[in-house]
Image (cartoon, rainbow, N blue to C red):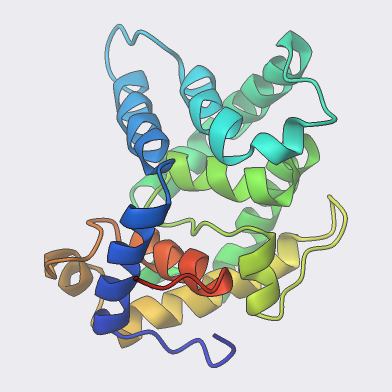
Amino acid sequence: MNSHVITLRKLKWAHKVYVKYEPRDIFYRAAIALIERAKGDNPPLNIAEALAVLLQTWNKAYYQFRPFNRRHFAKLERILTKHRSELAACEQRSIEGFIQDDEKVVKKLFGNFESVLGPVGAAKCLHLVAPTFFPLWDRSIAKAYRLSLWASGWNANRYCDFMTITSDQVKSLGGEQRISREQGVSRNPLMAIDEYNYVTARGWKLR
């Protein structure tokens, strides 16, 4: 993975492996659907509540020694409110358009989310809010890309580096539209790449 080279064939293979071994994919799809509902009229949940669906499953390890209570939830709601306009702008963007001038805003957003959710949870929340702009990662993926995570509050630069790498990967694959058209590849290119990163970092294979 250190060369960062991914092919469409590898994405298709990774999707098959991921679907076979990772049952939590249903929570991701549910969270994406809930986020979309939360952005509409008269939603059953607000965005912070919809995010909680994934945080309590995909980021479960983070809460082993931390409470997921009303106070924690209120902090997340404040961050979402504070950065509503910036996040709304990111929703309309593709990772292909990520440039150096974006880093200031990304570092600010990531740093604020990281202070409440840690570096892995921050990436998950940003991705759910703007799923074609912010990539997913976890500690094993970051390590595989030689971007091993530090303590919370010190990873915004690394996340920007990871965004640059991911942007280059999408471009090398022919762009977002080409990836989305490919059969056997997850519809969202960033999720497709995350599936590849996830199964590769864990050494999973089809049997």
